[in-house]
Each structure stands twice: as C-alpha cells, then as structure tokens.
Image (tube, rainbow, N blue to C red):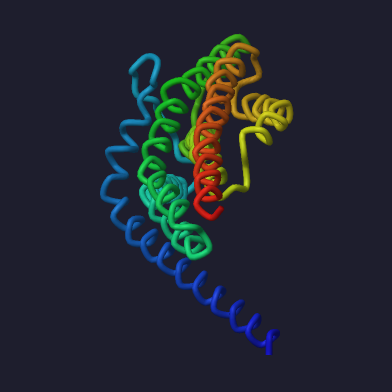
Length: 252
C-alpha cells in the first residue's frame, strides 16, 4: 500500500513538472515570436563599435548567416524576458514542500532576476566585450592582418562573452534562494571560498582575451558578487536562526 502511494506521488510530481515545463515552453515560444519585432534595432545597435562608435562592417559567408544571427538575438531576448517566469514556475513546483515563511521569502527574489540579468548584459557588453575587441584588434594589426568580420563569428564571439556574464550575475539570487531552502549557509560558503575563487578565475580567463588586465577586470566584480552573496546569505541565515529559536520558545 505504501509503495503504491509512493508511486502515485512520484507520478503526480512528474505530471506537475511536465505541466510547469509546458507553461515555460509556451511562454518562451510566444516571447520568441514577439522578439523578432525588436531584433532589427538590436542588431543595428550592437554592430556599432562600443569603443569608437563606428559601425562594424560585417560579411555573410553563407546563405544562412543572417537567419542564424537573427534567431540568436531573438532567442537571447526571449531567454532574458522569460527567465523570471521560468524561476516562478520552479518556485511554484517546489513551494508545496516549503514552510509558509520560506515560500514568501523566496518568491520576492524573482523580480530581481531580470534586473541582475540586465546588469550582467550591460557589464558584459560595455566593459568586457570592448576589452576583447580592443585586444584582438591590436593583435591583428600587430600581425599585419586585414580585419574582415563574418557576422556569424562576430555574434558568436559576442554571445560567448555576454551571455555567461549575464548568467553569472544571477549568483547572489541563486545563493539566496538556496539559503532560504536551507541547502546553503554562510559557513558552508566560507568553506567553499577557495574553490569558488578558483572557479571564478577559470571563468574570467575563459571569457576574456588572453591578457592579465582583462581577466582581472572581470574577476574583481565576480569575486565581489560572491562576497555579496555570502553577506546576504548570512543575513538570511541569522533570520532563520532567530525564527527557529522563537518557535522553540513557543513550544516549550
């Protein structure tokens, strides 16, 4: 009897998860269609050199380059817009297992997801990407190369820098969310600091040009984000301990 109930519970959870995923996919498709109406101005904006303000001349080396680039821009816009809704569906899926206070506390983080995503996009595009362009451009000139950019390679280069950074800017919210679920705490985060710093160093080297200054300029805000996460996690954890202590006094 107990095994049958467990199987029914698992089936119900899987059905609920499938329903939530269907909602996310449906909203993503709708936003993706709407995003095509804003692709053109975005395309013309990001093809202007962020350092000189001069438009970059791009070339199509295949018949599908234009279609591929338009799809990538639309998908990134759709990803950013649907990210809060996706996290809300995740919260709705796990919320039945949360306490009322935890349910309310974790819900309030969702609106900030879009803000952090935009902050990451801005940092990646206006700080890291110009550094990368400057480094590669100076190296090409030093080697006597003629710069002819393919539009597909240009946007691949851009996305490989901006997208990871925009997702990394969600780190404080992810840590706060896990702290609210009591899966993380500031003590554990402090013990993980060396490992976290090493991972952040690897990430900063991977998404920047091969020079120390650019990697360092990216590493500093990532470390500050991690330390901010530790501070915020400590505040949440202290409130949790105070709530637990108050609950114990009431039941004594």
